[in-house]
Image (cartoon, rainbow, N blue to C red; front, side, top):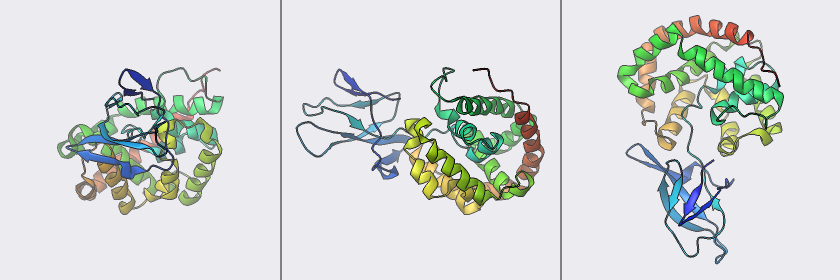
Length: 274
């Protein structure tokens, strides 16, 4: 969790549930966040402007800047291929939640989570290691690298969720729309275990039906547009769709070979001992 420095003092920020993505802006592919300080001297919050997102938010000293800070953390670019990780986590709602939040949980000290959430986090990490080292995935990233450079893996994650949603009936007996609604319900029921950075976009994620929207090109483009505006990912939503269409047959063929293998890998997962 970030600390906000005000002079020589540091405060732990809290998430303002009323603030939404409009509080972000972007310049030259660098992210900024709207900083709001709740002042003791004034009833309404004091807007200090925008601060660059780094390891912490650095706020200029102010005499009236006393109290807590309200802000959002930046979008995590490692936290993208939601649909695949949720499906690979099995049917348990807490294990699915663990697969969903894993990239926003740092370190190996997972004792604060229930057993099934811990299992989902660990499984997610093992699936990532399996995926990163897979020949078909490396080939797909190499295909996209001339277009996206160091972001090729991020775009591939999104494309793979699109292919999964597009071919959903091959991998699940539960219709995608119902699968998504069940996950949303489980996520809300278990929201106490969500990191603050995930709680910040929980209702937007559900309200836009993000999981189901991956089944359409317009939904993929919208996801890319959001990340292009509210993270360090370049704004290439329209170009990315054209590139996807250009290489769709080749990329989808590779995905359909790869995903059954990662499914089998996930089935061999042995939960860590408590």
